[in-house]
Length: 159
Image (cartoon, rainbow, N blue to C red; front, side):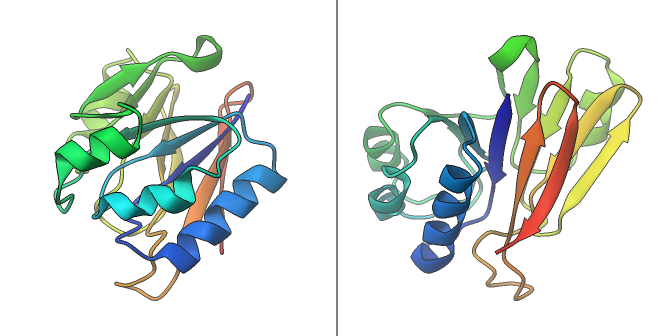
């Protein structure tokens, strides 16, 4: 199963549209957003995803009630754990406990955001992925990730 991973979109609808188009072209079956959508209007673009969706709130998300409504109830407080394709994934926004979660041995994949810097590595038997900043506002480089849950590998892709 291929999953798309993005984070820190920060209302950049142009880059978000590129991410949605890439995920559709790659035929990902699920998309994870690791927080900092910022405004609910981002779902005007996110609605075009042709797959499942799961997100967590970040530290810059404004109107959480409307974000929750616009997402159809698919954005959760962190940490959020779910199991697509028999892989246990934990999604967080802040990075402080990513390595501890990986070291626990309880998860196949740890997804996080917040730092705006891509991270794609295996720690023990756990894949750790931060797709970087999809919005591209902080470092000027807009990135997402596509992960293969069967192989437990990921690829960081510049938009």
